Amino acid sequence: MSPVSRGFHGLRRDQDEAPGRVPPGQYVTEDFPVLSAGPTPHVALADWTFSVREGRDELISWTWDEMRALPAEDVTTDIHCVTRWSKLDTHWRGVPVETLLDMAGREAEYVLAFCDGGYTTNLPAADVTGGQAWLAYE
Image 1 (cartoon, rainbow, N blue to C red):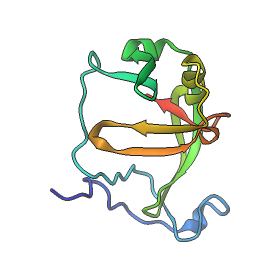
Image 2 (image 1 turned 90 degrees about the vertical axis):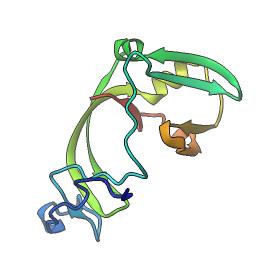
Image 3 (image 1 turned 45 degrees about the vertical axis):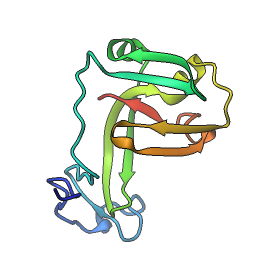
């Protein structure tokens, strides 16, 4: 199976269409090209959970319905992918990561995020707080 998802190769348009909004070497796309390391996992909403842990201890966990019941925000932002495409004015709705971390009573300076498929990333908690990151569901 190809590591490039269907629809990845979009029409390239000149970055001059949005002066000052598109980094050099990027092209604007209207579709949503996705580069994937494998097939997209599908989890039944009844089985979906999001948890915050500290070490091996679970601090708090939410089901899909519980997550959707939390205060959410609407966000409009540009996305600039490392694979050179930019999508302008994308609309999202979700729960601020800061809200989730605060509900968990977190004190850690760093976040280690895990997801389906084995992907992980770590970063300073300051990079996902202060209105910089959301758990987006729309």
